[in-house]
Length: 119
Image 1: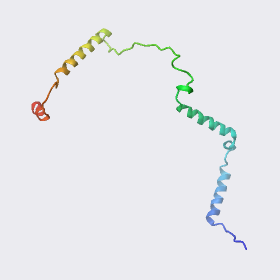
Image 2: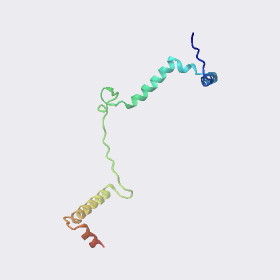
Image 3: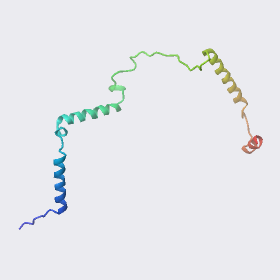
């Protein structure tokens, strides 16, 4: 004698719902074709190429072959000529160097002494 397995009400309900969903929302044939798989593979390969270094054996164009040009561009404020701005920068550098020589050069005072002097 064989034992007969009776499906539970829950499993019957789940089977009915799956069948209704399959009838309502059929899976398009496009997703199961080789053509679709080839498109997905090409998209993944193209995305992966973004992370391959562009030097070495994978390089398509090398930078060494391209001539390099040097442009001499510099910031000059409005209203000043390049010569005036160079003179101004030179003066500021001299002031900075002079200030660095006298500010805290060889100071050995403690924090308490400095606070008392500054207060």
